[in-house]
Image (cartoon, rainbow, N blue to C red; front, side, top):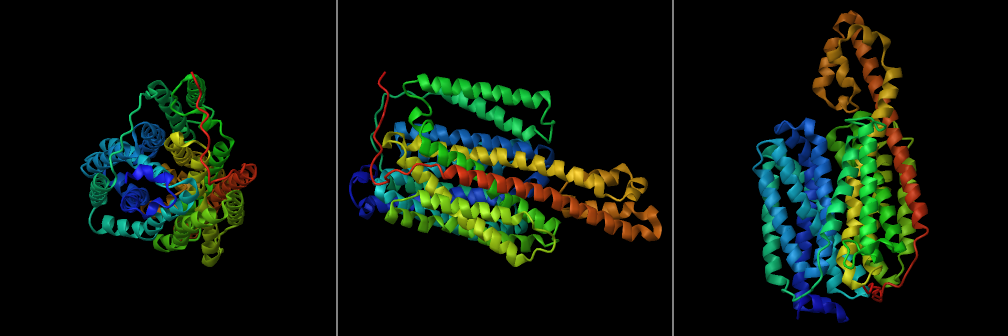
Length: 535
């Protein structure tokens, strides 16, 4: 029984082909999540080994750009030519990028490898959810989409520690060789378990739309990546990049409205349910970054905890965020109502983000675990809900592009969010540091000692702290006291800057909550009628 013909039956998952197909999708999704989780652990070490700290921002922005575009391109192509062929193509890209990364001898080549790898990895995730939509009728998709979060939960529980051990005891290169092995395994399973489905089509790929999308996304992401770090937000270069991006977006939307076979069908980007869920998901990504990226800095820099302990404190956040998707799918399949789950999830997230604002050096660890766990609980249902709403909102003909578009918003959030939060944090830190640093320090310390202090992460650098302590020598007997006052000023400045980040996260979470209150609710057990335009 062809796997993609099973969605019309009532219980398609009981067939042998569907069961084997699900095993393949679970393995493929785990391989995708393995890279997503492990790359954050290996990134600092890779940059240090390949002397790439000066290009670190490009190692984030360029792969994020490639990932965002790949989700839409692969989603559109999969609607035209079938998921199997595009899954295999994504696996090949994933594997080729991993091989290139494992063989990298300089950071520029590694960035190129990351672009290739991220293109494949980013395409795999929405394609896995799209296959679920192909395998099952609308009423059954919720349950199986929720179960697809099991590999994510296992990865959240094991991958950071495992990859850290591999990186410390062997080399970060082994991380990529394991990625190659996982990709190869998934590709072989696809060849064996997912039948080749004849899907002839005279549709044409929207190349002009794809190029305009790449130009619009690229200039936007580069603008946000440079703003506040390379150039001022009000500089002519940054304003120019944003203006060019806006022009490309306008041209893209105008073209898509005129095309018979657009890259992003108007039924997707004009759908109120889809746009509400996608925009709320994009905004809520700031809360995800606040916990995963900035709260560990708060723990280590303000509360002086070890890296190991800070990782343990936020581990429940990752586990809950991953596993909550499983019961979410089952509850949705039973109740056939999603709006109340959206409101609950975003409400819990907003409450947790506001609860983090008053955190200080004396906040107990158990409270941090509780609040971040609540954030994970609130966020956990949202990815599953978003992929399902994307599927419910469009006809099956557009399933791939709709799911890809939903992930496009996620990857754009991953590229833009750090730039906005990082810029706000650095500006707040510099203002706070200017008023808190002891005046005597500026008289006795040279530029070499004071220069690193403008970096908000200087407290985590043992080398910088030792250099600062040596610079206190001219103060004589008061050197020890001056050093302690300086460190206290650094911690207070870092606390003030992170509070700014937490406030932004809370406001964004509240905005996402208010936005999701307006989402319409539609039946999830029927196919959406196709409103294809006749040209």
